[in-house]
Length: 369
Length: 208
Ligand SMILES: [Zn+2]
Image 1 (cartoon, rainbow over the protein chains, first blue to last red):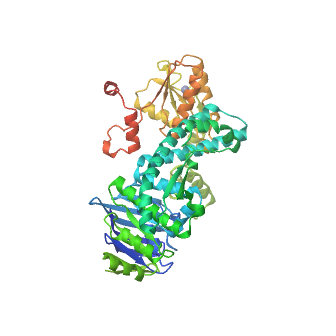
Image 2: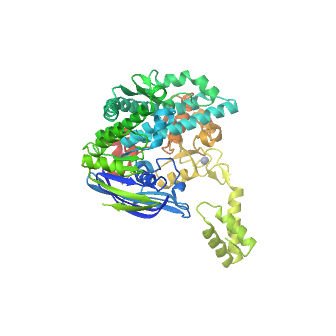
Image 3: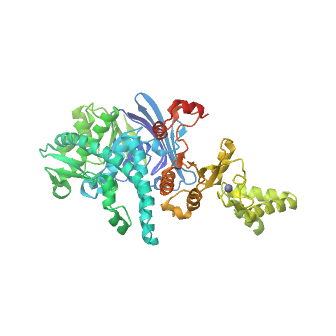
């Protein structure tokens, strides 16, 4: 899969920009705040229907405008796909594929697979489970519309169930049949999600190990361990056992929504015991493993976005990473942003990588062929 | 929007509260009424306010009615042993317009949705259970939207019915591919449901 060109209108600090990309490596350079990340986020948004950094659509409108528009032409298995994402203050969000608006945004997810790595992603290793569940969900949703629909349903049932538990407590009543009406749907959807996550995490581990060795030259054994209350106990039993606690705390205390994906190195939690370098190498290996898994499953290469991740990496690791991603038939089109061109260009010349360079200055882009 | 008259402004604001009516359309409607004889406006407001004040709801099925019972419930030719459970009045009108259904209705007034503060007590579920307890109802047809909340409502009512009546027949309207739709344009969720709730070929043919 490939992004051939993009047109940004009133998006962040871009007034009107039209760029054509090359099918291999696209190097985007510029100072901090020039708009490199905005460009990558625009690409991400065309594929995922929303910002990678959780910006609301309104926040992405250029100062003093009342709408933005992103248009991209992709090549997917030799078929062209025209995608237009517009957001205006009055008319809200519109997402079009080949000039037809989607009824549901979820129908678009998975059409254009992509993987992004950004500096703040290190929080995946260092912080709470929410971010790791989000990575599981965004990855599996790209791979299976069944997963995405089931997830939407699960979250909705969960919201209702929690509201119901709250109302029971406030009104001092309890209707077992009513709770059961929601439980049946929570169980069915929860079990499906558990199955998907279990399969994915197990299949990812060998890829993770392989990429970790490539990047860090490390000999440690790394893996992601799936932690779910559903591993030991059937979901129905779990809900039955937690009934008292759930009613007391007025929320569903255990279930798929509390799952975690614990990252380990030689059996120790990376979050606690890993060094900065180990954590960073792990993060990159994890994302590249996700890339590889999506590629295997879809038989289609995702777009890879590397946003400004070289700053705290040593020269050796940068070289390994670029050798792995830029000059390797396993990876397709790559977008790389960095504050300086020279160190990456030197490596590209050494590896004989074909690339196109873009210089971003305050929302204005100069192209070097 | 600036108005030369407070009277016009008040009228426009009231029109604009109606669904699907923006300020511009509201102004057009108000100016239209002003351009017509005063009697027209009088007739219009009388009809609307009489509808609102005199409307009754059927004691039996909660459909709109002019008396104690609605036209459907008071019709002896309808099959009173078959009850079609719907969310709202619009659904009654839609099903009646098909001219295919000969049973009676029961209007719930919504579906169970705790996040919107709607529980069984806010809906007309008790009166449905009471009706079934009297023993004349043989079949309940659930004609409720195929949403998560709709499914929950069907599950809840079915369980409540089965608590005291094991023999009642509970059916649900078929969910799936719309008539005249080409399969490749049907979304995957609908298609999956259609396959799960597939019908024997013969009953499919006679159902038309
Ligand atoms: Zn009636």
